Image (cartoon, rainbow, N blue to C red):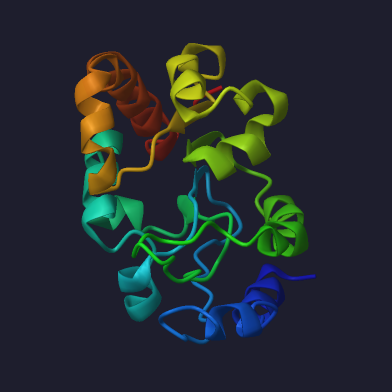
Length: 203
């Protein structure tokens, strides 16, 4: 199946309509689809937040600004579909819990779509696994110790994959407690990102 057909299928998905209708936002599914054959880098996130749900562009929020800073890329580079695919573990905003935090990605989304999307992206040279759900999918048992342990073990996966914490403001305290992340991992990540974007590749 052509990737265009797959993208259209995902955009038309309504598997979670009842689930989303029952959340505080009572919203309808609006899958955010951002990938194209030939992409060399994959940003594997969690799920769109409300802002991304509204604008229909991935990481078009404060979290995205922090992520792009970690990567050392411009907005134009990040949103270049010919080079960068952004494929979260769930394509839709899952809604809020009782405390106002984002609900986790519904597992049915990855179970339904992720293998097909990955098969449509055969040229990937670098994967950024952002958050626990993406790390568990891409790293399996190597990510069972939790996000902090997985990110701390980043050298075992680089330079073809980098596990990252979510760039949300909620993780600012985590960054303060783990200064090695920005001192050691981020410079290495930026070098790998630049090599892939400039065509040299991370392998």
